Image (cartoon, rainbow, N blue to C red):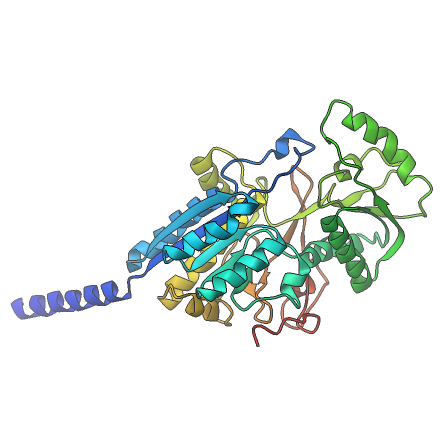
Length: 395
C-alpha cells in the first residue's frame, strides 16, 4: 500500500513538472489610435472611453479561465494615442518584449505599424480597418484580420437583398474616401450576386456639424429633393462610412423604400441585443464588467485575443510565428456566439465569420443567407475568395 502511494506521489510530481514546463506567459497589447472626428449624429453613438479595451479585459478573463488549468497566464496592455504618437507607442510596446499586438487604426496606419512590427517579429491583429486592399495586394504575412472587410459587409447586405428579391438598387454614397471605397464594394456585390444598380448618386459632404438643432431640418428638406426622380427601385443601399447622411434616409426619401447598408439594416460583427447562440451570457459578463453595452470594436478586440488564447491553449506556445501557423491551419476553430465556428482564410489572413444585420434594436438577419453555397464554406461567399485575392504573402 505504501509502495502504491509512493508511486502515485511520484507520478503526481512528474505531471506537475510537466505542467510547469508547458506553462506559457502570454503578454499582448491593444493599441488604439484616437483620430479627431466630428460628434456622431446621435448621442447614442458617443464613443466610450474604454472602447475596445473593455473587450480586452473580458478576453483576459476568458483566456485565464481555461489557461489557469494549464498554468498559462494572460496579461494585456492597453494604449490609446493620437495619430502623431502611434509609431512611438508601438516602439514602446515592442521594447517591453510584447510580440502580440491588436491594433485599432485606419488602414494606412495599420499597414505602416504592421511593417514596423514585422521588424521585431511581432504578430498584428487588425480589429477595425475594413480596407479590402489589406486583404488583397497590400496584405502582410504577420497581419491577421478580425474585422470584416468592406467586401464582406457589402456581400452580407447584398445576399439579404437578393434573398428578399430586392434586386433593383438605388445606391447613395458619400463623397469621402471611405464612402467611395464602401460604395465600390456594393457595386462589386451587385455584380457578384446578380443585383442591378438602377441609380447611383453621391451625397456631397459639405462639412459642418451634423448634430446641431437645425441639422435634421436641413437634411429633412434636402433628402426628398435629392432622391426625387430615381428610377424604379426595390431598396436603397447607403454607403456612408463617414456617418454624414445615411441615418436621415429612412422616412425622408421621395419614394418610401427599405434602407440597407449604413442605415436601416446595417452589417456588423456584434451588437448589444444579439441573444442567439449563447450570446446572452457573453453580454451579461461584459455588462457586469463594464456597466455598458458591447460595441463592435469591443467584440473585435475580444475575438482577437480569444484567437490568441485558443492558439496558446492548443499549441502550448506564445511565439508569434507558432500562433500564426496554428490559426491558419485546418486544426484551428473558435466559438464566437454566431452560430458556427470561425476560422481563418489561409490565403490572406481574414477571419471567416457570419455578419449580423442590425436595425438598432434587433438582429434582422444573419449572412451568409440560405442558398448561397460555396465549395469550401458558405462564409467564403462574403469577401474576397481565394481566386479573387491577389495576396501572395502567405504562399
